[in-house]
Length: 310
Image 1 (cartoon, rainbow, N blue to C red):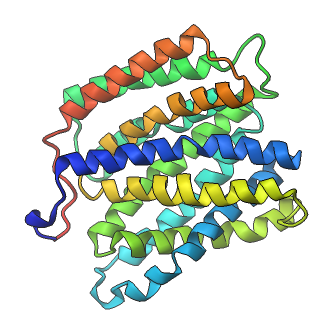
Image 2 (image 1 turned 135 degrees about the vertical axis):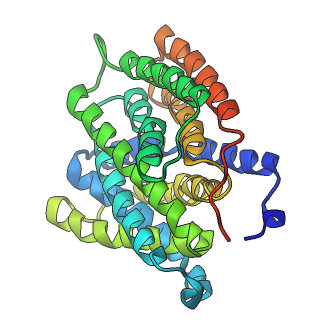
């Protein structure tokens, strides 16, 4: 793709911001679906994840005929498939974590992607981060850690915070690989529509049968559950995840995942208004660290080259 085809810098940030706002609703819809169905645990989490991805995949059916299969470079499809596998793993672990720990803790830990993306980009893609980027990551992750710890402790309603937090961490690993593989798939010829159609559909195909094996399946829930599943497919999936996948075409994956660190702030405030999960002063302190960390890292990576799409 020609340099002149690249969108304005402000537009990339605008779409990335909309994506963060959309994905902040994900944990809320998961919790609302669980409360409406009066179910939790691995089986129901698999049903939520599979339904969310299946609905999104069905809405993306028109993108399949537009995929330029003959023009794809070697490895493009393999990277898209790998991204779909990692996406399925991410949703399985992260959605399950919400049954065991608080929304604030889960979303804070699962958004530690910048650490893992920066590390993997350095080791695999030889994209050495600047000192300013490293400082920003450190500050932002301190903020995320403060927020996470604010969701666990005396008075917490979380049934098993350690298990939930570990599941959220493994979800962060899966999401980090998902973003990097997606970047590589698009660098080898996939457009955003074709890429997400492949990745989302494969992830859905992996998860669909698992709910029957480990859980209650997909039928017999109260009507609000299906409404929340549809909203999950539309907002956090199609708007949120697609915005991030599009953004990594034009900026460093580390910057994109740093922006996602705003998710726990939005999710925590929504959780307060809907579920009375009261954010402590630690949450606000963590948010301050988070904001400064993202700003520092963003300025530090402004000169980082976007992925080559020629």
